[in-house]
Length: 328
Ligand SMILES: [Zn+2]
Image (cartoon, rainbow, N blue to C red; front, side, top):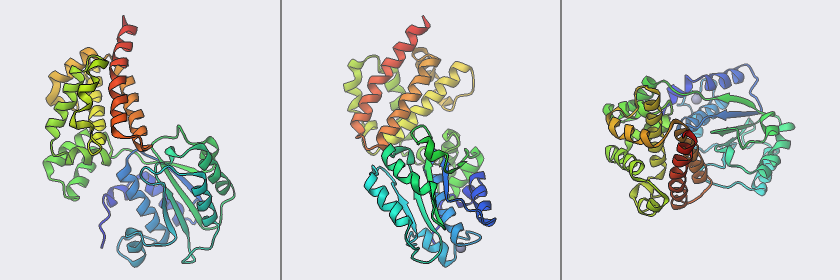
């Protein structure tokens, strides 16, 4: 059997329970919108919803569940995953497909991950189908935020938030999935409730060096003249840039805690954090966090790693000085 990662944790989430209860009551909505930036958890939630749609207990071991897990059910489709830029023509194919009879005669499910990346035009194309839903056809959309989702789309879907997971639960989930205890502890501590982020930090082979590289960069990046030197650093390669962005988030989180006198996520780097806090005011930390979110969005929209790093390194000195002068 295919083991579904984090199955018991996600099954316990209020998001899964709400959708599962709808299905049990015979009120499976024609469209859900799952709000979460935790990609690993969303993957599992999608699989569980699909299993539940065909197996009353989403048992994970029957023939139907197995087909869902190996993605061989013809009536379950996963769209716009990863970095695809979905076009209106592709959405037209989806809505046309949705109107056709199911292969197996039962429910048809369409899953959209990273829905926030879709342009207005394809979203609009889907709207009509959401307004006049087909019988036994269900759309399950997910996004990290609703900012770029059309209000008309949002008004036609049932919104469900996949909440942050408790630290202890994340730790045990990582251990169950084969991560050594000490690393699981670290991942959970830095996760801020996200299984995806927890895993990134837990599996980072050179975690200590990675923290060092990011804190060094922040203490040494004084002006845009330094950008070129840092751009060549290994932390901005295609393979590492996502983890590096998560590292920046954790470092800035610690800087914020330092300003507020709260315990630091990176207690072991207190001295470096204090130095960074001296350069980045609380307001600057807020803006820097926004810059990192923009970097993530650009990466997802297929922007290449060098351009994203370039943007990050040009913006950081800018927010630092802007927020400093506004304090004076
Ligand atoms: Zn089953």
